[in-house]
Structure formats: C-alpha cells, structure tokens
Image 1 (cartoon, rainbow, N blue to C red):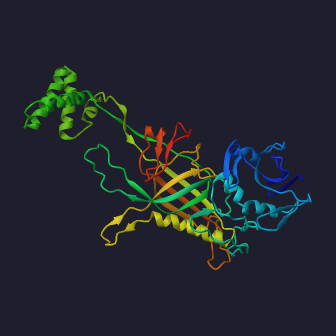
Image 2 (image 1 turned 90 degrees about the vertical axis):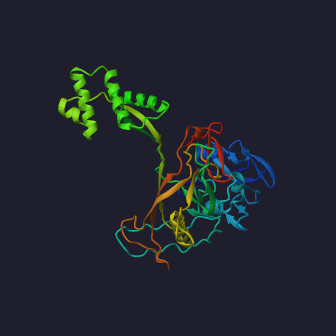
Image 3 (image 1 turned 180 degrees about the horizontal axis):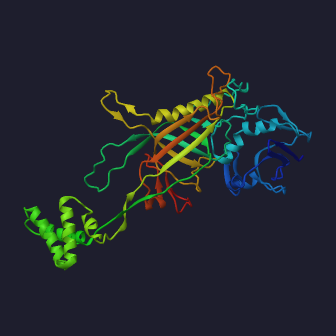
Length: 441
C-alpha cells in the first residue's frame, strides 16, 4: 500500500517500511532542519537501539519525510489500523490520521527525547473576528484537559519536535559578596523555582552587543600635572600645603613647556586664571584658542544587553484560554517585588533563565545564548485587534492577547563566555561554545 494524505498544507505518506518487514510506515513531511537532525542518529527505545535510517525516507518527490510509526500490514491494503486510540480506522482520505499523528507521542518522544504534552490540535479553525464588532465570539466546543502543571506552553498543540523558547524563573540570592581575598564580587546564586514556560519562537529575533567607549581629553598642562603629581605622591614626607604644591606643579609645567614669556606664556596664564575662577572657556573667549585636548575615545566598561520579546496569543479552546492567562500571570508574578515578612525590607523579584531550544530541549546552536535576565517590563495588550472582543465563555476570555516582555541581562558578556558559557545557576549547564559549535552569546 502506498498513499498520500494532505490537509491544510500538511503532507503524510503511507509507504512500505524500508526495513523490509512488510509493515506500513507512516511518514510526515519534515523541514530540512528536522530531517538532518533525525538522520544518521541512533535512538534507544524499549525495543532496543534503532538507527536513524529507520526514521528517514526520501521518496523521490522532492520532499523529505521522517517516520512517525510503523504498523503491521493488514489484509485489506486500503486501511491502516492505528493503535492509538484503540480500534481507530483510517482510510486513504480520512483526516483523522493527522490528529492521530499529533496525539500518538510514543514514537516521536523516542525520536526526539522530548516530553511535551500529549495533545491533538482542535478540529475547528480559530475564529476570525470581524474587527469592528464588540459582539462576543463563541469559541470551539472542543476542550482539552489541562496539563499536569509541570510546565506552561503555548500553543497547547505544539509538536514535540518544534523549536521553541524556554523561560524559567529563578530566585535571586546575593548573600555575602565581599570576599576580601578576591578583586571580584562573589557571584550571585540563582535557584530555580516553580515551573517552566515554553512558547513558540516569534519574530523578530535579535540581540545587541555593546561596549562603553567615551571621548576624553588630556591637554599638555594636565599631562604634565599628572606626571608631577605621581612624583609628588611618591616622595617621602607628604607636603601639607596642598595649595603650594599645586602652584608648584603648574609653575613647573609652564617652565617645562618654555612658554613663560611672550604670547604663549600669556595664553597659559589666561588658561590658569580661568581654571582658578571656574571659567573653563576663558582662553577661548579672550584669545580664540584652546590647549590641544589630545582627544581620544577611551574604554569605560562593559554594558548590559537588553532583550525584547513579543508574543501574540489567541485561544482556540477553553484549555488554551486558561493556559494563556496562566502564562501572563506567571511573568507578572515572578517580576513583582517581594515583601519581607516584617515589611521592613523589600526583596528582589525572581529573575529568568531564557533559552532558545531545539525540539528536544537542546540549546539552539545557531541562535544567541542569554545569561540570567531581570524582567524589567511586562506589557499586555488586551485588544490587539483594535476593538473590545471576548469569547462567550464564563470567564469572558479576550479573543487575543499580545504580551511584550523587556529583559536585561544581570551580568556583562566577557571574551571568556565565547569559550565556556554558564547561566550561573546552581548545578547549571555549562556550554563549551567553540568545541560544541555554538554561535555563542
């Protein structure tokens, strides 16, 4: 038996299993990234080790397919009997096969190692509000059970092999950071709390690395005074008359520069008078000239990177509506300032670990790594469609939400982070950037 199933642009193929067992293989069309990720890998299953070749097909139609599962060939070649749900019968054109592909996670979990929720997509399309009406829109009747709260996720039917972004709140524990034996502050401790949030990656995706450089000046008199001051500080027996010492420095500068007489000497005196009375531009005002400032751009220090994310969320059933509201509350609550039991002090809010991931919880190698971040702003647009519209459910859920998050890294990026990157959490993950072929922070 060989057949092709298509719905809403998705393609599935039913072809003989390449292992030669005579079974029927159900393949789903994969992106090039998914295809290469699965190809040439070995997966451990309850039945033993299976090579990646069992999971990849190139049927010659210009597309690439990954095996979802393999079933025993039936006497009637026009039918395939899927084990999940039991007794479900799927013929060549039955679109229920797509729901079965998403609902049956057992094989896909073995392939990708992920444990994302076991949910099928809704059978109804997302409602299309008319934009100008405030009449409530009735959501699809189908509902899905909530997850076990080991995580929050949107969309609920996110595939196990879909790339995503993960957020995980951590407690900020500074402790005693003043180690007298180190020039650096002792590191802050980040302790994971609560559950994780998984969201589909939405554009734009960007980062901005910057370093502090600022222009600065050092004119000839200041240059000489700096050198003389260093010598003065190095002399045994500190001078008690600071004013006399400063006058001696400037006098020595004038003599050293050989400008005591003539126009140049007058210019130096004008400059010194201006400095003495606090008029910095006196020389320019009276003589139309300035001392050579020796202007240079000088390094001032590192800067902390900002990260902005925008997520558009619209519920397609009651379970997803609750999930969206839980996600919004998750970020708002974890960014809130904490009150101490006595009320005398306020404690720092939770901070966040942010990680782009492949579908199998592996850090994404071709997107930037992000250190621990503080959530500085969480903005929710409850009417992103331009008008007030709700579903006709008991909670009057909004038809759509837009959540904008503004983060800032807690510590700067250093050159060593491009060799070994650490999130800073206790028992956390350390990434060998160069040897593991990551793009780095």
